[in-house]
Amino acid sequence: MSNDIAVCAHCGGLNRVPAERLGDNPKCGKCGKAVFTGKPVDADATMFDRFVTKGSQPVLVDFWASWCGPCRMMAPAFASAAAKLEPQIRLLKVDTEAQQAIAGRYQIQSIPTLMLFRGGREVARQAGAMPEQAIIGWARQASGL
Image (cartoon, rainbow, N blue to C red; front, side, top):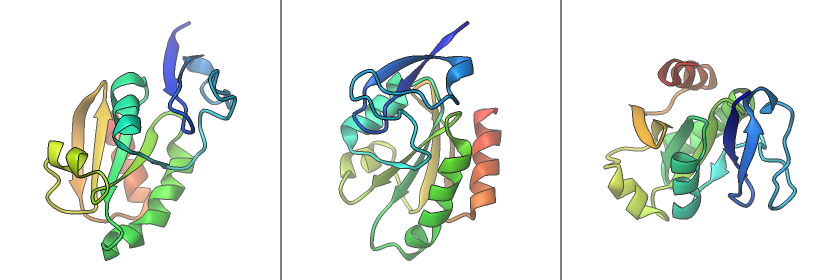
């Protein structure tokens, strides 16, 4: 029986959860709220680093900006994909205007850009808006799930 480290969507707390119990709506040991929300997490630099480097699940990140039309068009599809991909894949949104250091670190050239991380490393990248089913299919294929 292996334990996964699940990062709380609310407080960033690290929670040991048996892998076979990830889908049982675990509660955070730090804040008491649900670890998984079925919604993308708006991530600042601290939350981004915590999810990408500390959590056991692959992390799908939407790099976006409020002024970007395609980003706003894709937002509902990304949110809907979160409900279908969690808890196997965590979804984050990173506002490239507010989090310029993260965008610079990963050399984000166009938005929206989706990046998939596993074990702290980038494993796939896709630029451009996608519908929900394409997001889900791409994330599952790229993550190996």
